Image (cartoon, rainbow, N blue to C red; front, side, top):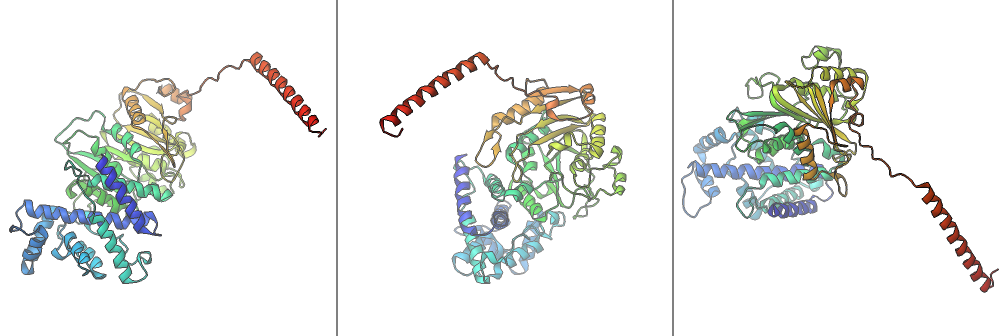
Length: 528
């Protein structure tokens, strides 16, 4: 959409100008948080109007009416009513419109920003079922960062400039479509690209998310039952959202995710809600997936989480991460059937087994990992063999190098299913099909569609895909290195030695003639 591109590009340019010497990965915490706060405030305004909570008076804005009517002893009732429906409540003095008004009238004081976020935290606790989704979501807005300004007043001025910038955004396109979520997603991607290695910690490139999401959504028909999708290393939540976008229109979805980094966890909460996901359709946790299994008893709401298996599991976990592989974990139901634990310095298979454990019997799991998981031996070799013998591995999809933020290594998508009817593994080598961009390679829509269609057809494609039998896998000693199964060798053109000799003779004659001309010229000039 041209509107989206224009608005997003303008916002990004202005944001870069405002951030000065602040690192992009840190500055995102300010601009994205204020975007989210504006969204929550305006969503609350919409609720107050559509549910006739306020007595409408002509000529007055919703914010004016709210400030006039939700006062004194009536205020707690208003906040309770709002929170019971939306999961949060914003007091009249703390609304986005009130904040902008204070800034425009030069009535803002430095403490207003801290008070605003503190009040939000307290009012989020009004709804016990939503407290996990809202409390502390703005904790990463460091109001005391000296890079915003050397004094309290200077920092307040910097924050006011960010508020003005966010307030200038038009959240709807010319045709009235709400593009807020898309703008937010664009900015996350831009911040990830600017943050270098740190960017890879919270964002999966959209093209990779598309492949994963289309694969796990294949064959799904619209149902009245909730489709459940889980990401044990969810980052900013973009991969979860992409799965939802690839399901049949109108399909009810519940999103589940876990993230170790608190800042990134907050980003995911904001991202899902900015895309219109209600708080009661998302259950996100801030924890170490490999240490604190999902679900881990009652959540922060005090509600037991019985949904320990999901229709889809998707993940782009940190590659070859360190983890605690103490022997006690061999009793963990996620790992005990495989005889070995993933190495301490390479947790890749720990994430694989965690995902398989939580995959429903008819579900699909797709996870991005480094190539080493295909061939490394020792404990990983034992785990890989067991997974294959259990007939869980459905496909191996090789991706191009340099398509992720922060690493240039080539990666693979492993696809798993539990109730497979055939004993074979599809190999796709998509590593050579990409578009070269300035800083990193990218997958085109044509590249993405080819991968997904090849996966769906499950047939051999010369120099691109091969369906390998279990006997072939065993012959290769369970080594899954893609070149063992997909022959991409290009026959070099045969060299005509007689033609090469003829050209060499021709070159010699031309050199001799040139040397004779040079000698004649030098003689004429009296040099020789």
